[in-house]
Length: 552
Image (cartoon, rainbow, N blue to C red; front, side, top):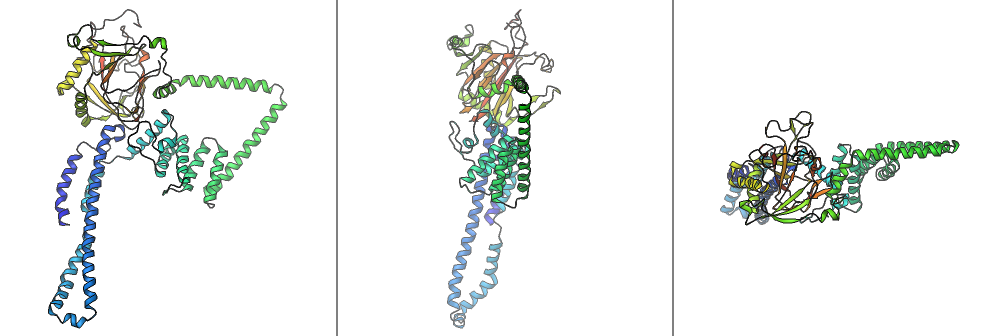
């Protein structure tokens, strides 16, 4: 016990130093890079727990040895008590044991070996993920499920493409996802995950969650989606397990009443149609109107479907004829001195808008340096509120970012110069290098990089005009997902470590190119690191002269 108390201050100092990069309410779920720190935190906690277990085992071993010794001694002594105590040494030792040693034993039993573990746990708990992190990670799983058309069983069994560390979900995990969806009145996902929890319980998985609880949520979520007959079916199953369940009893009566009501209404409608001679024509017209309305409604929200299809690698709109006009080449930017003898590898990714990729344009060593500089500064990525102009977090941008300036490190300055040499554009008016790391299901839904006409003050404080172009480094490979997609034109660009993609956001006339609206797809498996440079108009007057035509 004395050893534990003496070592505690040293342990605490080590622990505190390892947690300097963490802080409370840190939105861990928005950055896989920072979440890695939590693994080491948990590892430290397990080490502390094992130390506590060893201390308890040592204490019990000492008590056992003492008990075994006294058991043998008292068994012998009680056979001839007077003869045993007739020996003066035995009499002395009995007095000593009862006066001193049993007191020491009492102190040993009462000694608290939990101090070290509890202290460490208390320190680390300050840096644990919050309820927001858990909810954010859960919603990310639901987002991935929708974007990549995954069924609940595929996610639960961990059968995701390219996974190295397969992990299965328990009944409790599925139930928790269902509850989080339920709290958001998302009854579609509530049904999916409660059904998965029920499936695993039916297959015999042991759990603290019982079928009655799962069936209660499942039947209600199905009812909320308008499927009363199925809701009744699951409620009746619930009552088989718990015949005295009061809410289920009431629900059965209500569901049966509603079904009877629906049946009567259907019969009346059928009879009315038969009586009216022109009813059939009217019905057909009404159905046509409904179809037209549904088509109109769909046309209002095509982007979401396009976005998700492109993320899955579907719906890419590149014809063979257009594909044949895309090339790869060695590029020296009009015989630039730096690239005359060692031109960069350039390949066309898309024609309209023109998107090019540069291969092997940033080294592994440079990538590690950029990540090393950025990681301590990563903060939840924000968006500019289009109404108030205030920077705020948004559920459609799940990542953390940091800004790196050229004067901080020669590597950043060298990267900035490289972008200028390859593009031929002025970097003095560009924004600093932004480094981003995406979190669980990390994404950035469709957006423009440039300021539109209805946002005249978008970059007013910078005084450098609009964002003329975007340069995007891919600093990691992504096992599955994580593409950069352009929904309006059906283009998809996939992450490839060490490469960069480049496109112009503005035509040479200064007008915005609306076909550059793009998005970062959710990361399904892996860790996505990118860095980007937003290049502005000022300083480009002689480097990219203005055109007379709006779309040139």
